[in-house]
Image (cartoon, rainbow, N blue to C red):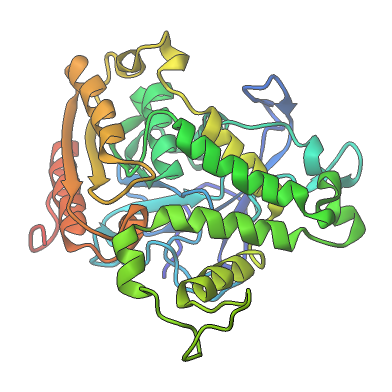
Length: 394
């Protein structure tokens, strides 16, 4: 995949991406009141920025994602999380658009987070890292775009927590977003989702190796608690139909049950594998901080209790997408966003994709979903003056 940095945008380069330090000239004030004077941001770009800098698309990753959108992950070696739709000639055509994705604030793949060293102490931040919000993540992304010399995005797109960032972008920086695609998301985290997050956090905190969040000082990690947190969360990303289709009640490497507590069933083995591989690439404290940021997200509460107020006067073009079998962020959450946009006469289209793949459908091969993205991008590009894709929309 070709990586092209915008002309005149100086930054340090690391294998598979770029890093830049932000905040030294103007501190980054977080919603909790803490000011950060140095934030390192790791990001990846694909394609080339055009002469008038009008073809930039910001991709916002989900809770356990990162900036490796279309490149192999440096730890797991697996393909990028959206490699099926980002690339030359694909939905997000890198021959046409300039794609940017950064690891979020609080992350663990190069952007400043709790596992990094606090310059004031010379030790990892751990639990002394300030509590962050979705708005803080978006503010850092906006600073990154300032660094890259990009005033307005052609489009901002993301699913799940990435969709929360999309909505916050449209509320906080409406003049900088021409088009927006919030996918499988909500304008606030539900009580059910907060509850699932709390189960995961308590699994981590209960691990003896968590050490009050200072595990890195002791050269250990709460891998058991983090694995359980991942297992519980992963169940919410799938639908019951998808789980039954893939595993049913099939036994794992045996013909009869063991009458014990090993992984008798294939679904148990699958979840254990998900948990054990996750701990190799993710930091436990980052999991605590990022899930908390999602819990705190409530766009209506930030605008007088009326979600429509968050979008009043917006000129952004919206395409809101949900999936019929997604019970983590059900369609009703997307409809609430659409109704708020309708209340302020925004330009909005809405699609519910019929699928049995659950919340993770936005990361999987869903032809109707991909066709929806292509059609919306084509129409927005024409209104933006970017012209039509060579050969027309596919």
